[in-house]
Image (cartoon, rainbow, N blue to C red):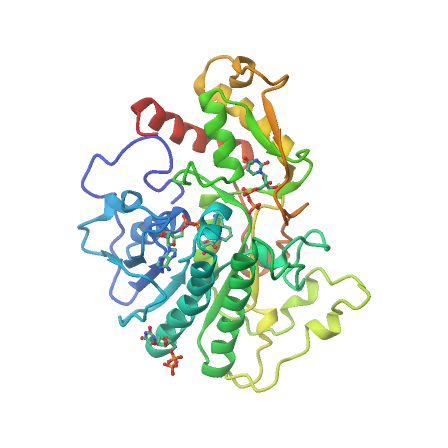
Length: 397
Ligand code: NAD
Ligand code: UDP
Ligand code: UDP
């Protein structure tokens, strides 16, 4: 299924989008924490279309009920207003743990709350997974690599994070969430998955959350200058939301391989002085709850990067957005109608601790999950610009 409802223009005319009918053996009870947010609501769409029973837990800090309104009342769907920092007792088969604000504006608005959400919220969700024997997937982030000095970033890279900077509540919060996840894996045998998600964009991203793709598209649609921070030479890799959902569901449902040498064809760490060596990284871990045979870092239990390896400078992104928006509006370029800038760009200072470059090494996801992003940036930007343009014309944006 590649175009869940709400992914592009159009509303929800019939009561519910058509969902598959599963046998009770195939059907899972799936909890999505943070399911009213951007990523979560697309994940819920896909799981519902697949015929599963989906329970969403959200405190609506950055998420919105309207992202899920098309499922309200469906017998397979339940929406709970709940904060993950409080314990939760339900019976469940799988947990996608996404609850956490994701944009710098929202996670810096209350830094202590962001840390509590990542630490106590993840602790509670893992406690729930342990009690119910549910499989648990953590939505981690490329931010665990900080401002990387290894490029592109493979999973073995331990990162370069400033623990006291403005991004630390999020970056270190996610790092501790990963540590907790592996604590429950080792100590309690919880069946865990960790997805390190790189920059993702698509319809339903909040337009005012300050992230670069939504900022640029909305600015271009309004005919305003695009705000480039710094000189625009910093890079990011942008993944379209449907590719991420493919990867998350693939990772959740991947079974451990029988072959613990799985990592043999992965890119190996370079010989960094003082850095990791392949020997250090791939040592089998003693005292595993699963009989000591699985090296968790070489299989589905290891962290897996999910991102689009195509890397763009912020400046290139601005050019592409301007072109795409011009096509979407089917009228002269937004940039040609802009006052005050020679090329429709407003240059602003670079924020502190803003990573200079970022690109995933996706070897592991390819080998373990047979997963590769399929959406080209231009096509994804067009979907997203169309979504916002329709709402702008309706007056709802
Ligand atoms: P989002 O802000 O749209 O969604 C997060 C959701 O979590 C929101 O619905 C919010 O209300 C909810 N939430 C926040 N704190 C909560 C709490 N204490 N209790 C219950 N619910 C809470 O963000 P998103 O882009 O959809 O990100 C979802 C997940 O994916 C996050 O964990 C984020 O760290 C991760 N991620 C996203 C990206 C990206 O590019 N979007 C990249 C890397 C990682
Ligand atoms: N927890 C929860 N739901 C459950 C089971 C546990 O919210 O179904 C919470 C529990 O309140 C605790 C956390 O998860 O704060 C960790 O639980 P665990 O059983 O691992 O630790 P303990 O309760 O022994 O400290
Ligand atoms: N950025 C920009 N203009 C904007 C918003 C962001 O130039 O209006 C830059 C930002 O400095 C960063 C990149 O775009 O280098 C991606 O920013 P975003 O906040 O989307 O993601 P993150 O920094 O978390 O990867």
